[in-house]
Image 1 (cartoon, one colour):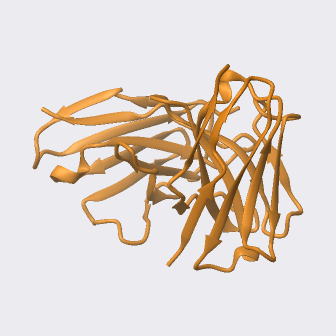
Image 2 (cartoon, chains in turn orange, cyan; image 1 turned 120 degrees about the vertical axis):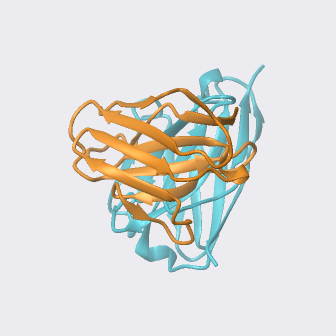
Length: 108
Length: 120
């Protein structure tokens, strides 16, 4: 099973600041990594798939990078609606599909 | 517009059974893999099961293998998850998730979820 480790667990930032979230895989997942955003009481929403492709309707301030075992989600300038929990997910080796433990982006 | 509407959640005793359903609309149901992903209260996401576009491939997480059964009724555009021998650690919100074509597991659309509570 591929383990995904996200860091940091919590990121405290102010609106307008840049957010950098990390996801590390226990073995290579090539580019088969996705990022999701989840707000309280809501279902997760796909932001990025295959490491760097924005999903439909996702603003350009969200970008993904990386390949192999190290991946980054960057939010260039935080908007108030971006404060949420973010999960990474790999689909390279399954079953099982696995998710990271999440990074909470909170208002400083 | 893609819509996934889950139902069937509720309170069940340990050892009991429950079937949750998901009605899909807004896309060609027989063209895409479908999944169940769950989230225990206050916890992260856990993939549970997948069924391929034509039902030819089915897989489960080890935690539910032998107890849960995924199926789909293409005439009703409906996905099911039959959950047997439920345990307290199965308590979670269960999300119906659309995948890609074949067994491509890009989780692009999620339902709002249905809550399953396992308690005596």
